[in-house]
Image (cartoon, rainbow, N blue to C red; front, side, top):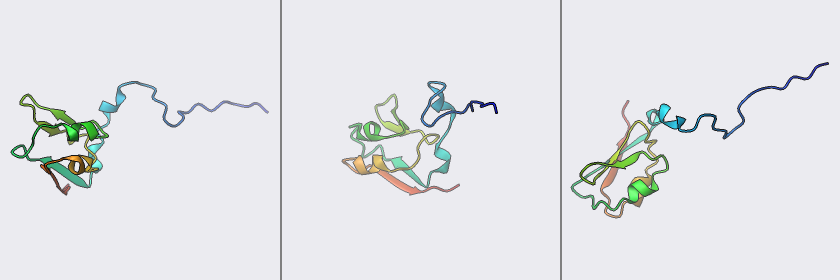
Length: 92
């Protein structure tokens, strides 16, 4: 009896570096955070703590959330020292 090797991807193997931008993971979010720029002190704690790299800085130095990739974990809201980040339940 001949043995065949099965070819499949093992867990956590990245076959194509940089491919995560292809997969917009924010569409299953339950909570949608938002940033109130009038309260923001531009400290960057939201950006530093976002596990999905869904927060970036705009040309004025304020932070913006890319909802294509934000999963709504609310770590940004918890880490904000001035509480300028709040959330709502995502409406689809």
